[in-house]
Image (cartoon, rainbow, N blue to C red):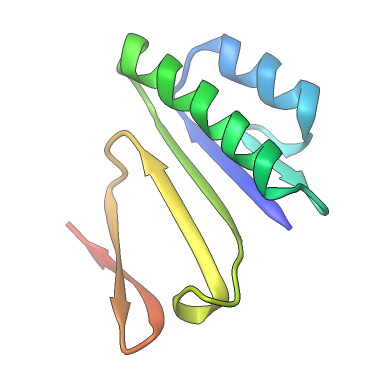
Length: 95
């Protein structure tokens, strides 16, 4: 399951993400069986747009057996929390 959460981003993100994923709540997108290649292409688009527009925050997460807690996390922007690896478990550290 791949999940993308957006906060305070331009409308173009919503349109793009809604075209490839299901928007289950405002700014929350899911896809139960997204391949790594598609996920990487989506992340590349989001990264380019975020680099150009420079506002808001985006978090993408998916199951990865090789990652701490079997969950991989990517972020763009400045989320109010920091995600840290503590002995193989993801924890949230408030900034």
